[in-house]
Amino acid sequence: MYTVMIVEDELLVRMGLMALIPWDELRLRVVAKAINGQEAWAAYQKFHPDIVMTDIRIPGMNGLELMRAIRAQDATCALIVITCVEDFSTLQSAMESGAIAYLVKSTMEQQDVIDAAKKACDFLQKNNRPFHEERNSGEQEQLLRDYAADQTIGFEEMLQRCPPEMRAGFPGLIYMRMTRAGGITPTLRRSIMGILKDRLAKMNPIVLPCGEKNVLMFPGEKIEWDSFKNVLEGIHRYSQDTFGLNVLFAACSEEVRLQDLPGLVKKIADCYPEDYLYDSAMLRMHASGELENEALRACLRLLRENIWQLRDGNSVMEIRDRIDRMEESICNGWTTLCNSVIFLARYISAHSPSVTQAMLEEFCKNIKDETSFSSLFSELLERIVRPAVEGQTMRMEIAASIQYMARNLRQEISLTHLASMVGLNATYFSRLFKQELGMGFSDFMTILRVDQAQVLLKKRNMSIQEISEQCGFSDVSYFCRKFKSVVGMAPSVWRIK
Image (cartoon, rainbow, N blue to C red):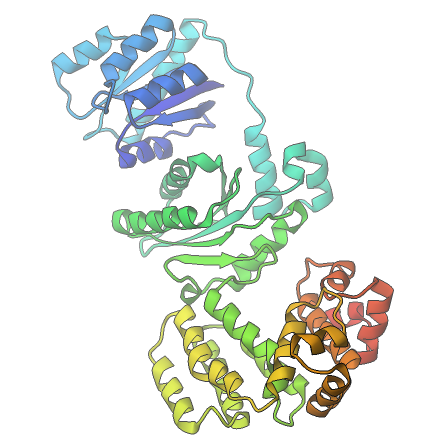
């Protein structure tokens, strides 16, 4: 295998070169890309590529100066010139500087680029340039594609065949969906993959095709979300403006374990195909596959933390069922989601005096023409959920205690501690607690923990042991007993029902 460096300050040309050459077929590998002479010279000294493809007009040290510097150190490096115009004097200077082929930007086609690459290989062979042993990066990429994208091999086989550094997983995952009216050609997808690699080069990513239209990317470095988000939004705009291509990104910036990769990729492909989920071309998610949306998260948290205040004589199970139905409808189409949100809003209005009929009608009117996922839940939060919670009639001390308990389930919480927090005598607090909720503190704490366990059991990537610890149970056997006493079946049975 021969190594290649591309020196070109125009992204479109750089991207075209990456897409037009069948690198694997020609047994070539791009080891460096640069946009100016200084970067190119530093990259050359680091990688000593066998082939250098360089524009003449680049910032800093120009292409001719770069070629002369390389030729002074390396007589057998194959130099290919990229130029804007077929000017004789310029081409003569390039040939005198050591170029063995040239490409004219305005007229070059795929075969021209391939022919230049083949001519460079012939030059290297005639000069007895040593052929590098192929690194196993291509094999690793194919292995990862088989495991995560195509899902033709299982975890055990992957674990046996992958390199040690891959076994711990990856610091994130990006799933790129592409749609275009005129279809997506293999060349166009390679171009977009090249842009991803180019723009996110600092992350040292692995970029793989996934299905016919999609792309998977595994960053080699931890994702800094804000700057990362800006880069992906820039790629979205560039793809739209340049190719008429709609590019959407489902991104996870958390550590993703190797064993969870296929499930996460499948969940993205199956559950998040709808454009409305992608605010500003982005959908952020957790490693569990759950959506990370600030408006949705705030809405659900406020509902679940205050479910006991909102019950108004109804069972908590009934209210939770309404909330769960809405959450389950998130990926079932925009119309279904909006209807589910309106259904929940009507239920809350019917059981909360502080949410009037006029408020409900105003809410329904506002979301009628809404198209933003985040805005939909912001409206629900501010116009329905928050007024319902703030207008609840439960004693403030008990409401505050319940919120504290719900947010600190993993901690040891005593009745005495809670009473002290809200400034009440422990005996009086205990009596008031039972009066408001119809049960004692210990029973209520158990129900809260079991409620949270039911939420976590829906996440297939968490074990019973992990859920037990997350919910504050001292050991898994005790958790299973308490869960069965509340729900009527063991957690493992409930999970698959």
